[in-house]
Length: 135
Image (cartoon, rainbow, N blue to C red; front, side):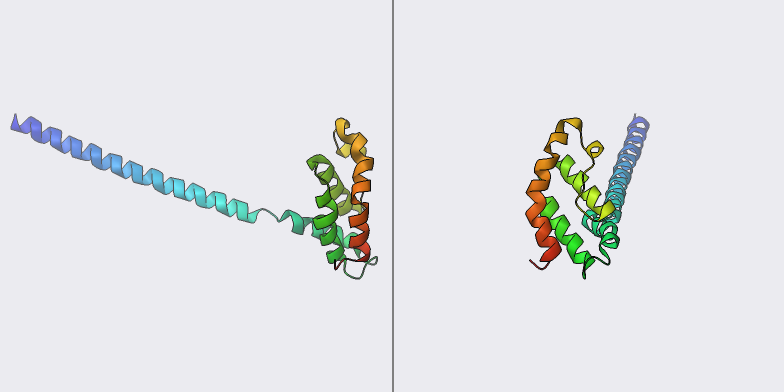
């Protein structure tokens, strides 16, 4: 009887010890996954910086400070557009051509009728960016 109780106690201690060790390993793995996620997020390019990098070469020769004009277009003209699809199309057009452009195939058919109104909305901030980029 004593032998059975002792054996059961030994087995129980191994199980509890193994369980604690397994839980510790799970916690370590969770921390590692969180660190990998954080590193991945920190390696994502800055969308604004990427936009300026793509836009600025189109502005060289047109403006004295191409980065300032591109930053202003991103921060003011494109920010005036609430609709995500239209804003992304506008940013794409500016970064590819250096001028506010939206191709109809860049937006869903249901929003293509809003392209004209979008240009009306961004006209003033665009002109301010191009001719008064310090404001």
